[in-house]
Image (cartoon, rainbow, N blue to C red; front, side, top):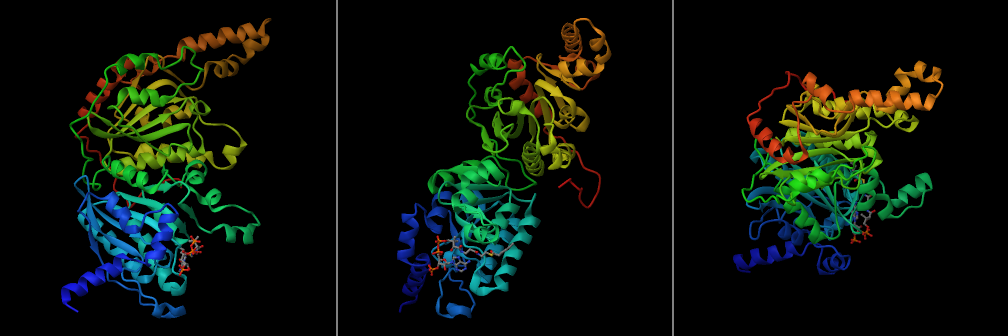
Length: 513
Ligand code: HXC
């Protein structure tokens, strides 16, 4: 055969993966193939494949007779909106996308290149886990990947997209990365599948319930972003990448063509209800402040009492953390503390300034929270804010009570600029509870106890349910009108643009894990 023809033939063979019948099966299940996914994710014509002729070396259990060039994973590099990314995409049509020694080597190679060149790594996962026929060499291959994931953490963004079954080792690499995308109905992630669960715990559960996109988005928080199919998922990833820098030494791109609807300066005045005990959706506040349609909420369905996500202010990426009064009154609990802390640490690692909108009645009390470790988990958020060196601004919208005031990016834990709206209430606790404690004797001795309690509640509220005690002490830098917020934030972040704060020299801190 002519040498050119041989190459063309070999390429064709590699592109076929596990063969047309298996590709058809993949399509029938509503899934794209590994290569189709890459072509949709990357800029047209930008993908350069590496290692399409690599084959496994195993001889056990008949593997010596089964060889698939590429060995179940497509790897290489390309661009998204003109910026380089490294990529691997597992091919389920080849031995279930299972990870062999050489499959792992291919992934490690692109991970190493991503690190050397300061570019993000994106993994499209669709794999039955360690290749069972290979035994320990496959396990070692996973360990090589986990090691690299950990070393790359905080250096380059690492994105995992779960687009099929991800079992065993196939879930731990994503877990070590920064963000996980999942596809409804076709992707699931679990350490052990339903059959093992049934054998060990006698529980009967479907794959979808055990580890589907919805379960991980709502219950475990493993899944950050859900899409309804492969195409939508890959579009979301493309869009998401525009919010991130290439690596920890760079800034996120800042498009000049942002838009802001000035009518929102009117709308923002009417978001807070007259009664401070009534809920509202903090995302309305976010929307009225940021560039139009620029909010990308992370973990939308998990721990809804805190809202986190990326947005743009005059084109610049910022990370937003906001208490959500529309869910559990915006209280801080274990899940919301973990969610907030992880987001803050990502932003800090990748030079993304932090904006906090605060409306928090405190930490959630109770045995469930205490016994499951609210002390440790709440401390994660405190720790994450305290160690963050990126520009940090807080706007207290309404309640800032108790320890939660300290935790939510207070001045004393290193926030650069703190503002409060006129409705802010900044105190150790709400007026009702405060009056009950500090005026206990007076209330119990009064002829009309209820009236006395109300009188003392009003007295406490008059003194503390406002932003001015905090402003007098400099814990907030200014009290601002809602409609002034966007402008003040833009000027504030501009003033902090050159902020250069260095943590004390250390090997690493010891976050309360
Ligand atoms: C080798 C595998 C495989 C594996 C699937 N296949 N998983 N081959 N090693 N781990 C092969 C199948 O034999 C089959 O080959 C093809 O892939 C498609 O698999 P099916 O079972 O037909 O597909 P489906 O019904 O969709 O089920 C997918 C699945 C299931 C849920 C992923 O295959 C499964 O449960 N696989 C095993 C999962 C697992 O326990 N992995 C090991 C985890 S331990 P043919 O030739 O018939 O097409 C692990 C350790 C690392 O990963 C730990 C690190 C911390």
